[in-house]
Length: 338
Image (tube, rainbow, N blue to C red; front, side):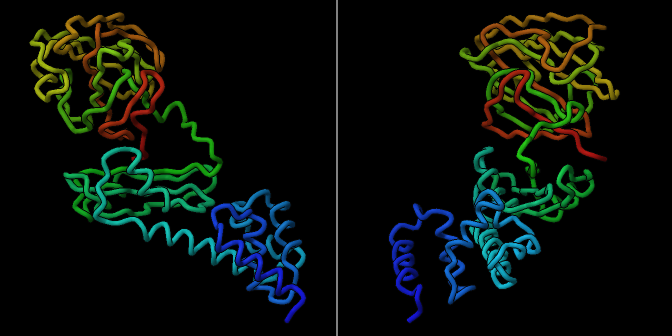
């Protein structure tokens, strides 16, 4: 019997009794029993945590850096890398292809394992059928610690290969800071809940574009804000009825006011205020030729209703039905490289 056998047995018993509350340094100490069967691994566990800052830092550390720690050795480094790889594969294996994904919380739970332990920025595509049953998840690319490139062609090919009717593109930030470039995003024009994301012809140009519909109830703030910075090129008023704004036909039959804004890159954006069953007064606060900053107020709909945002072709929605958004703050769409 070795000099540390009694302590090791007590540590194993403690772990099996309360694994969730087991401290990180003790977990490492226990793990290294199997790489260093005759050594006291407690000092090594503390040294690793101190040097790399956390358990995550230890698992993310390169093998060559791990081997610089006294008492570590190649076997210990391989053991840590194996544990990390097993953890990631376990999380990925728990994702069932037949899962139903209805909102951003479901998307997060399904996609999170694919970014486990990533040291570079990645792009993954979640593909679903028309009833939001998951068809598959594909990693589309890996960049560096600051960026990852993607093309619309790559996204389209991956979606078509699985015969997907709906997709969600996911991207991580290794730094943990997820502030996008000002030129790459569009923010919500209204407070409310996303009720549709689908291609439709916009009422000004007639072009079929990705359209995000946001329903505002009577309790939301009813002010509407510009999704991007640009110049108001056209404003069109359409008289109509006052059906429930959540209905499909509201976008064509109800009273509405459409705005075409051209951004600094020459892209056209169309926002449409749609009157509803209760909301029967659309307020326009801009004129053709006015310039708007991102998030600047351009109008309101008294007592709620709906706003449709039509995107240019090189932007894609990053929200889904059921998501709650805030005007001028929540990101609705991002630009992709062609």
